Image (cartoon, rainbow, N blue to C red; front, side, top):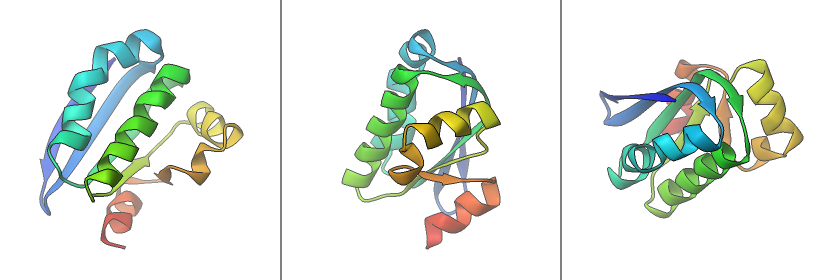
Length: 113
């Protein structure tokens, strides 16, 4: 699992994920992803277009970081989920508790809403 952190104007963090967000992937990302999405105290958008698979540990990491961001008073928006990942979100009802956008531009719009 690979992660890239880009600081956008605004200030907004863009986190790009690439690989499988399963137990090993979540373990690999854990602390770095939390630091990028919660600890910096900035709104964040997470690009899931490179995530080919997601499992319970990956879901747990996303929910935990989204909750942490909310508690710190900033927004956390996911975008670009591939069809398999989007199906998992919908079947698990996560699209009801996580802010999920179709595109980067839509995710950025949601930060200002």
